[in-house]
Image 1 (cartoon, helix red, strand yellow):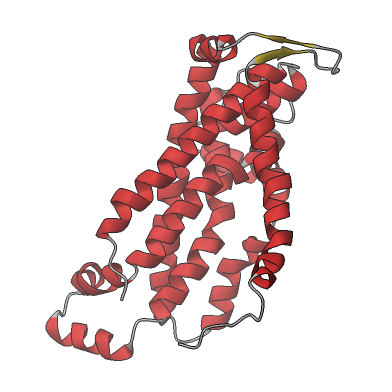
Image 2: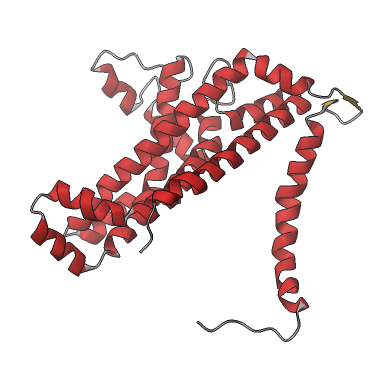
Length: 293
């Protein structure tokens, strides 16, 4: 493979400076500022601060509201990730078999990719509206009195439903690309060796999709933790109250509405450490079982 050559050793560093500057300004500097702020009790208007050490962290872990949000975040992340990946994989497998009208079928499955999270939240509000929401009326046929923004479980269901719907197109695109990259000769050989469609999928197709699935696993967990902020903020209508909240949204509520800058900074630091640990765990343990061809 031909490698790029530079006439001066400082030239590649110069090319990296703009990207490194953006990373430092928008990631490392805010992260360092959050770590520092987590050890202080700060005035929300910036008139002063008092060093309190680890009190923000101890108060956070003793808070019943924070632990409730932590458990909901775990459940929310697992459900959104598993449902988004499994449903998208099922749709991709079915779409890969469609012969007539394939382009139209795939386009209808991918169009929601262009919808922004806040817009997806607004669509969820329309679907689950207590007065004339179609999904609310549908579940009412089964005796489910759906109350969005009032009932904790109902609101959580709406958050998960909209978040999964929003993420399906992304997963579908990647799974579809992975299926189409499988050589035709491999599929024909699998058809000869195993007449069972489910057997061929688990023995041949699924292992070949493992690299794509591992990548999507990481992106979906990241999406559930962070990118669903707009959906949650829209669905709770700016009045979280006793409604479910993820840890990211709780950082926003406590910091910008509760004016607890030190406490919200401590929450962000803990969340950053958890995400870092999760990423290391995925690459060190999960990736060892993934075979790239």
